Amino acid sequence: MNDRFSEFHPLVNMVFYAAVILFSMFLMNPVCLGISLCCSLANAVFLNGKKTLRFGFRIVLPTILLVSVINPIVNHQGVTILEYLPWNNPLTLESIVYGTASAVMVSSVVFWFSSVNTVMTADKFICLFGRVIPSLSLVLSMALRFVPKFLTEFRQIRAAQNQLIKAERTGFFVSVRRVFRELSTMLSYALENSIETADSMKARGYGLKGRTAYANYRFYKQDAFCLSGMLLLIILLLLLCLTGAVKYRYFPSLKGNLFTVNAVSFYILYSLLMLFPLALNIGENLRWKRLRSKI
Image (cartoon, rainbow, N blue to C red; front, side):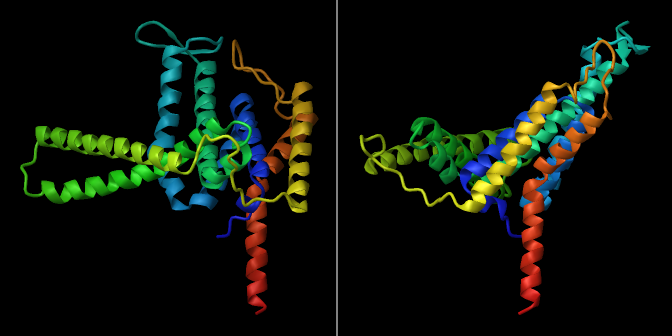
């Protein structure tokens, strides 16, 4: 499917993801957490397909369960005691709910960063920060490039090792030796790649005074329109936050007005902000299919 949102100016992409990630991290209202998780998952699935679902079931879901179980064991705050643990510490309802909420928050942020990794490419970071903070933009672009590149290299090394190890004996020590061999190969590859990168940057004049950077991005009217709409939503959400519309506490007891007029207004605006890229992409794809059907 066509990702229309990623075609906007990098500033539009950056403002959106910065806003939704910060809101997801600092708003612990249960309804806001649910909205953030659902929207982040929907966006990630649209961008990355079944790979996101596999990642969710293999990594995110076990993390949610682990945090939800560990928090009530180590955190005994709360006035609603459900049971006493074998070591005589209380198991409270508040600690269970807070552990679940924390796990949902972490999961939503992970899914948002999954979308960021797809949309915010290295050249977009350099376009935004290359002239202001060139060192940081370089580090960010290299970090984003590092993970997929070295995962691909690691798969190639493992495939080669799988072919070589067929002739070897199997067992625990053989497996350990194989892992160390793969890590050693990856370390050698990383060091060699860093030397090549440094030589390439030096040959291209990185760090020289007066050096310019090319960026194939222009700020059009549609970018200004979308950015203005997002900023308006963000300002309205911040104003509602200042009024305490979605204020919620977990300790010492669960307390908060989840469905007041201001809270429901916040949820609607919050959903509009977080679903903006998905709605834009789906609308663009439907429009494209309709145009193709007329040919």
